[in-house]
Image: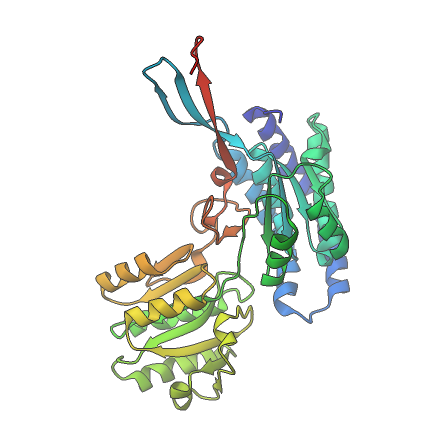
Length: 398
């Protein structure tokens, strides 16, 4: 693959900033077409689909942030000289061609492409049919930026295939694909894993938990829980489950405060049988499958546990491995929780809503990886590279 210089890549991104701004009305008009066709049957998906002028500003900002970041390609990770005189360097290198499959969220068309391009990767964008008009306009913007700077449009391509055609594409891609990132629900991830013939990096489900320890400060608990649940219900870092310690002093009074705060936000509540009498209008948990479910809705599930170890075990069993938080005044408890809970991000006395590239200081992100290889958490610019060994000799043989 041709390696572009930093100035060449940044020239394309600089053009893109102007083109997005100039195309604002076209983008908004195309998005309105998508919204009119979609309806609002799935509120979470609808929320992700919406692009307004503020979202366009965010797209411009995402391109600017990546343009300002150092080039991640060609960095020396390690170097040394062996006894036989061979000089060996390990350097960062592009993956090659990345395919991302995502539902709704036209902003991914900007963020994924800007990250891939700055990291010298080609990218294939398989957006959902619900965002097709918006995505076409945004990819046209990319193609104009590439063409204006003398580069092939092949660097950034939009794929519009139905399910059957996508299955065949995954099994027999027309060109070599080095990495696939499915960004969506469990069905999408299973579909991609079943049919893909190359590496798959999963941006998995949320189903995030908060464990409220017996010594938690409830003046802190209430705003953290409300923010984690309601700040953006369609986000994969939103809160779905609350585990409260059975030894909490004044448990009934504290739960009633949280119950009232959630009801004020029109949150539907489910609860263990032992907590039903403490929560107004809470429904019983139907079966164990609820504990595995990511809600993406104003809905939350309460459970009671008999201590830190039980909470950790339950979270590791049911959560999606995305973001989990402990609310406690005890640093040792927090450290144990954060060390033993197996997820991409663990929190102490803070909302799970911070698992995001921008909020974590990474910048734009391709996805939030819940895989352990090759990276877990926000996939920013520095994570969209692999590595290569450069070995320099003067005739050495083995």
